[in-house]
Length: 155
Image 1 (cartoon, rainbow, N blue to C red):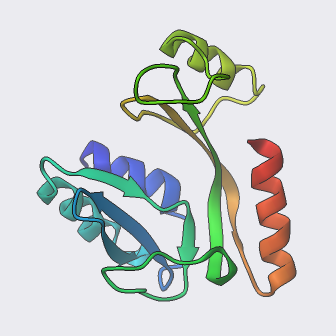
Image 2 (image 1 turned 90 degrees about the vertical axis):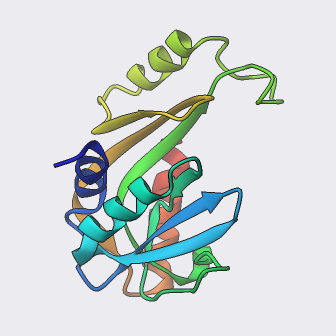
Image 3 (image 1 turned 30 degrees about the vertical axis):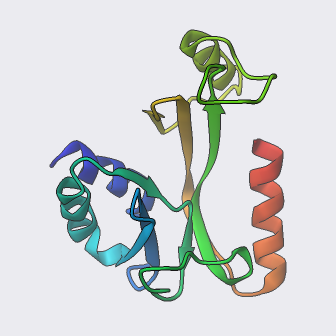
C-alpha cells in the first residue's frame, strides 16, 4: 500500500462507499470526485498528478459535482475526521499570528491533548487530522450544523 493509499484509507476508509471525496488540483483548478469505495482509484489519480498541488476535501458529498465545482457546505453529506491547518509564518503566509517555525506549529498541534491520527507537512505548515471513531453522516441540516460547530470549536 502506498503512502497516498494509507492516507486516504486512514481518513476516509470508514466512510459509506457511495459517498464522494474531492481531490482538487492546482494550477488547473480541477475537481475530481471519487466514491469512498474506490480509494484505490483516488490514490492512483494523485500519483498521476505529478507536478500539481493536490488538495483533499475535508467533507464528503452525496454526488459528483463535476470538474469545475466543489461541494458547498450546505450540501455536504458527512465527515470522517476533524482537522486543523496550522500554517507557519513566512513569505507564503500573510497572517501575523502564526507560529514562527515548523517546530512551534508541531508544539501547537501537540498542545491539543490528543495526538492527530495523521499529520501532513503541507509545504507551508501542517495539516492535522483526528479521525472519528464513526463517520458523522448528515441526515438533516441540524446534523451538518452540529458537525460544523464541532470542527470550528476544535480548530
